Length: 113
Length: 113
Image (cartoon, rainbow over all chains, first blue to last red; front, side):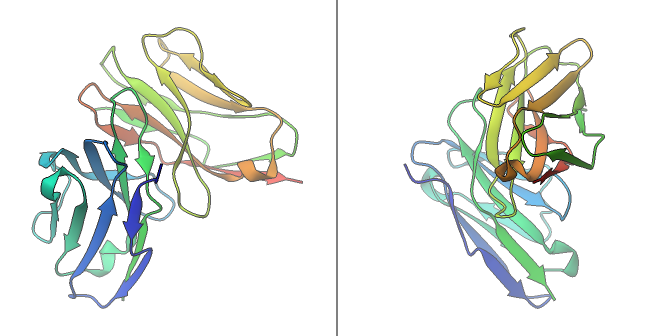
């Protein structure tokens, strides 16, 4: 079984530019999460999807961040415009059962210069 | 609000020895899940072990075991016969009744040959 696939693995952009990250969850996993992980810290939830519905986006900075999960499968997270403080690792995870842990992707390391 | 605390930013252990990583959490819920995740330098978050709060028996996965003290809200991870491949960041995580996972700040474990 393929794991959670994220791309790109690394991204370097100039501030004020847009950037997008893509995530393909494990087949059959209805729940998809985007997490932000700053250096030396634990992941923090940005948004959670149940199928195509965003059920928890309370931590998503909506002035510059947006996300979508078309057809309840793949998801895209976008930042526009990016700021220096957005430099971090963006992790995607999926799950099928509340009692199970998440399966994470390898993340995208974003550097804003 | 639920919080997860890991009081040991860094730990080290001699190869083949045993080490215990501490985790405490704060919640008013009675039904929840607890997890330990491992994050090596590759950034891939790997589920190490899970514990259901309503189960009194401590979870065990090969060399990994937990000491779950529900009343004390403590969830420590014991790694026996430590191996070089165990070196990583370890995150304690709490999953709420509404399916939100909160991560602790992490403990960096070094294994000394």
